[in-house]
Amino acid sequence: MQALIAEIFNYKIIYKQVQIAEIDRYQMFFNIYQCTETKQVAIVSEDESKLTQSRKNALIKLESNALLEELSHIEKAVENAKYILRLSDNWDDDGALKIPELIFNRAVDFLYLYSKRAFDVFNFVIRAPIIQPVKDGSIDLEWDTEKAFLLINFKNSQTPTAFYYGEFTTENNQKFDFNGEIPTDTVQDTFVSWLKNLS
Image 1 (cartoon, rainbow, N blue to C red):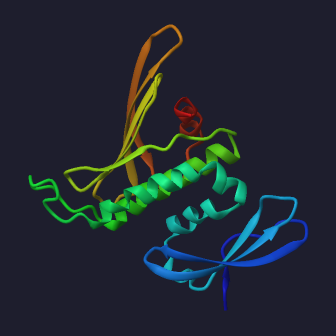
Image 2: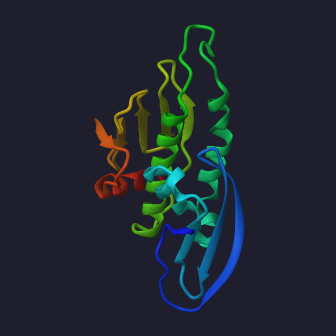
């Protein structure tokens, strides 16, 4: 029996089916029930058991047509970064480690989660970051704007934690920097609100 991932809210339900070609390496079909007059969508998976919780959360990128349109630049950045999954050991000819799929997915899921939260709750759109591999087998998300810089590194580790460093310039040209760590499997609203500096 198909398992329900998201709840169906309000109004008349219109049924349609779409195919998703690549999610967690499984060919899967999702039945999307679009609720009219709302942006709410329920997604039904043919094989929910094969999805990690973080990947379930990442499916929010399919939640509405409006969301897809507003965050299409994020999706494009992720697609362009998938070459990272094809890198082998020594990809820089200087001993660099292969990037595990787990780490790539962790960074991508984090990006989807925070992009959606910013759009849905805080009403702004995050710019697409540069997604790049690091020699030690980790992944960087990097933003660099006129007034702010942010680098988030996802270590080659089983621990669902990322490390960040940022800089911010005020209207009076005062510069501040900050750093710390942040869990990758939950959304921190204080961090989301700061990301508006990157919009």
